[in-house]
Image (cartoon, rainbow, N blue to C red; front, side, top):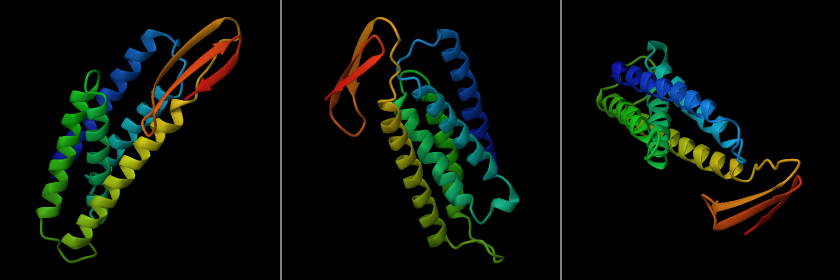
Length: 177
């Protein structure tokens, strides 16, 4: 089960580095300037949690760590299917495989949680990852940077709401729903 966590961590970390390199080469023209740092930090956190789950000292929290990592990577992989999504789905499936094996392994005595408690911890971790990703997308949606001079505009559909449009006129932002 440890190899699955290591594999998930390596794949997610590699995608994160390649994602930042690719975005860095595109230049800083995106008005939603907080989205990329949020996604990069989220992927890094999922990789770290998958890696930490492999440590022997993490046996008590392994199900929760793998639950967070699996749910976060699978959901983000689904959202980013046409860009960086496929390797994130692979990393999420590796973390899920590690979670399934963790839950199927009988718990030895010595402070590790039983199957029911481990399943609850994994489900709670998955909920935390989903809420964190959706909240992060929602919060970064309207962090729009307007140029000091000139005009620009755009719009889209929010994750938890309807559509919106924005316009910038000499540094002044107007958002309408």
